Length: 208
Image (cartoon, rainbow, N blue to C red; front, side, top):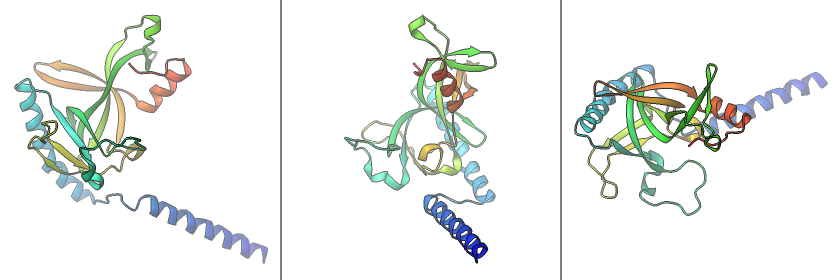
């Protein structure tokens, strides 16, 4: 009898766990590998063409990232924002095999062995100028309006916010930017959580 209740309790807990997971992921976009490939083949040439045109013409490659499920919030800014914003302005700084790379903020890093930490400006450290970048896969992108919006004169990129911390990123990395023969380059240096953890441990919590 006790064994029955133990098994029944385990099954009940497992069913509850599965139900909770289905609830948390109920709005996630589920695509087959073929569908993901189709989106990469669709969006990559469009983003690269627009990006390099902006670079060639010496124009800021600013875009507005908008949550598809909350697209009507734009251009309002909540007075007491909670969680991920429904939209934000950013600069497109490059592309990668699976998507686009956008800037989140800039600051300095110092190398510690094979790792990185935030530079300590109070100690007059200058460090390497870097960008905290978000990587948005093409399969998170549902549509793009390349016509400048009337508020910021920037294209709008409509995304599924299904990534890191309910944002449109599959990963967030500290990166180095440089220019190679007129072509912008981006090199990954360290994972956001790992660098932040080490920086906090060493008493340098802020990236600036």
